[in-house]
Length: 504
Image (cartoon, rainbow, N blue to C red; front, side, top):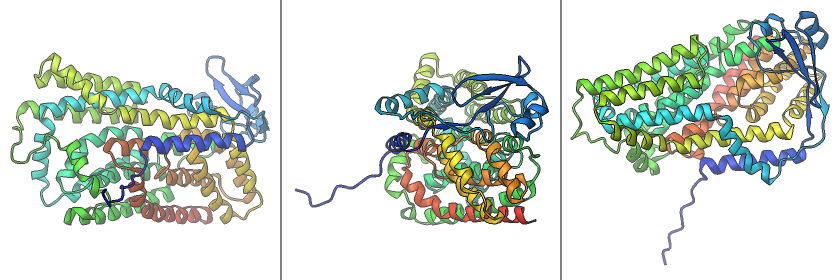
């Protein structure tokens, strides 16, 4: 009998999410059900539709007078021009409702419904996986990685700086977030060949996006939506958020590069050294530095077209209002074009495309299960109750304590509601008026919302992080070990910027 103890492993992303799912379901038994009345603009009828907590609806004229009578201090044009498209909570309308606890059947069905609700991003992931499968089989990635590795020899740190800064710029400007899932299979081999580990690649991409959205400047899904719902201009407070963006990005780069240098010096310094063989096999299975495919015109053209697809995607998302359906259609077309250029034939193309898509089934299911947690919250009618309790908590506080507690509240709300626009439209009409009672500007509440939810998005299982980790087979505990110290430091930057914004 072996005397060696069986090595304990951290639960998979699926298990972590199911634990969260069960805990949230238990909350529906403990937290009273309740809801605010919701206001939505009906474009066809040019009317406001109010849905009362018990489900009955009524229509009111879409005028500024109607909004004033409801206590919603927002310009009516924000609704009529489409800046606010989701239902917003109406202040002072919270009502307790009959409890709707989510039992075993609901727990089991929520992830299934979550997959249905997330089918747009899931199809995007599948199509992307298919393209990557085709390009991998063609040898284009191996040849391109070798070429890039030679070009960056001795300057590998540029990979970290360029990727982090560009992704942060996308996050702060147009909300680059879920789209970053597409970057991992492409960039991971490059980072590994450069002597880094998978955490360095995840950090450059995920932290760049998270910091960008946390310190958003023109992001339509967070700062613009939140400011509109609060009744202020999104440029209010932009100077403090911009300074925070530069400081947080710089701090993240120092943190990532210090870790990357240690790993590059000795692979045993990696937090995921025990997984190195497995991860290398996954991303570098066909890569042999001594026997690389020729980087010919055909392979160069395939990679150029693939890279241009991302440029077009960024253009479409940032200027044309593209959603995942548009992005999926773009990559499907690109996949077919790449298949033709590869010359591998129809049967081989289809086989490799399906194999590549199949490799990302785990990622797709993670996205669906995470959405299932939100479904449990919505069906259990406890989101508004948590918001109502939070709003009562800060009554009567002085301005500095008030704004700091607001960050904590938005951290908690961000755990349960990872959607930035969803949290903004739900919470901002309730929380923003509280700023008036303590004598601070409402733009401070907008920043508190972004810093709180943004900080929680570093680690929240209901957000994008588990899907990102699943892409590269890194467990959640290793990510926490890596990111928690940095998370604390960036949280400190956010708090300092917020206090200055309130005081100045």
